[in-house]
Length: 520
Image (cartoon, rainbow, N blue to C red; front, side):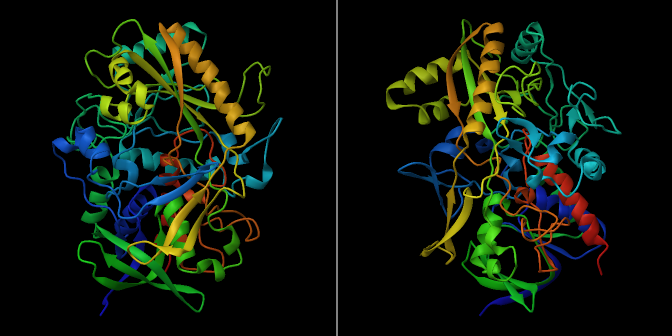
């Protein structure tokens, strides 16, 4: 027997799309239920333990893998980490706004112009007040006017940026010496002590770690608790396996309690998918919704993830002997390409950010066999810069299902295909060249470029647009032809810019949730 439940708004996923939508709807007095396949984070010593989190039987490892085809002749098995709050609990807390020009579309080959077919159906001005609100809810720390490409903003950041640590100051000084314009990364972290729950202790375990003291303002710390206080219900460790339709409407979700295996149905007036750019198309396709909408053939298509990579340099002395927080500096002079218009590719390149060195165990796990011990030793001497290049949306890059194989819950297995374009690689390599110059100026010899092949910035698989022939969602993020089914995670984005997408996902969720809150 299936247990039956009901609600007005069923939100599937508690990441940036789901949590911010739940907050707005609950604050408006609507009946909200959030279903999340992850568990609540336990705030203990495990939060800062790389072995327990990443290496040996990871604590929050999901129940079903994804097979990813991103290299010829090889399938990579990817296991997501599932928590309440989505990946905000593990992310590095960077909270950037897209630039105004990013809304005009993605880069094109050999031209400075944008691809008009990927132009957003809304503008930066439409999203600006919701960026303000998202920053306020996460208490983002930053310095207004510090960023030379900063889009217009009407309010200061909720917190001032903290003082630079010694490693960050080294990067800042090096970039300045080269004539660049480094600035503080806007961060959703409680540096001041009164902007969230716990005060940041400036540790070096932030990116890819959980926060033991709840100073990282992830969504399980600052957004979901307020939604719950306003009446929202959160079902954790619970998975939706199918959305049921009737007469052109989404009417219910078939759900599994992962702890007990109990299956039950949740009926809802409105259903909001916020499962991520891999999870939402997986659920739509598994539910057969591609056969119920004119845009169904596009579900899962145009997957983007940024062309990300890290440039590492070795310094003569230990770079962070005090083991302090040092993800603080970004360089954005090349966001729109070579300022002198001499170097290729033309058009957007992207952003460079300072990042932490991974723990010794993670370093050993991700380098070739003969270099493991050397990499662990040299990690104390590394300076690292992350390069984020905008990638072009491609029809062939996609999320799809394999009906010949089922996961443990009976869903068709999730598969991913992805390749970068020549231009994507050129833009990333151009940023690598700039990053190497900065590291040399900081006294570090660039020794390694590590291409990131994870999908932490996955976007674009259910993009919104002006018509059903070229998009999955309408401008209000409603699935074309199904008036009560919405998608509010990063899959809505038709192009990605070159900044971390989390704040944009949050702002758009607030925009759409305001519309939903006014519905009868």
